[in-house]
Length: 92
Image (cartoon, rainbow, N blue to C red):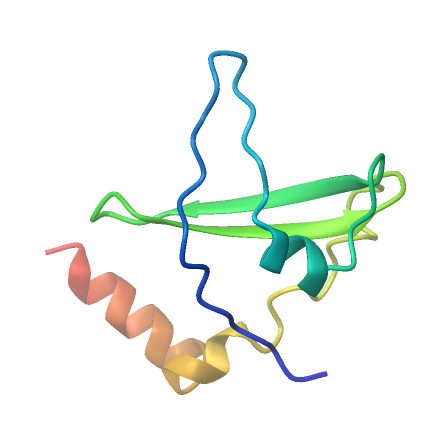
């Protein structure tokens, strides 16, 4: 399955209870309904940004629900080896 990336033209605000509202575009893309659960994977970058991956799941089962989630992720970097070279170069 090919990845779909969308730009969401609004920010979410973190409430005092640590909650955010997912924009309608994201809910529609993930076909989320009220009461459904989402598992999260987060990768924090050195520049302060983060990659956040939400996984629609009825009940999170580690690692079954997350197995293979990033198998195609490294294609945008030209493969795992190129990604690792780039990451290691950024450490200097």
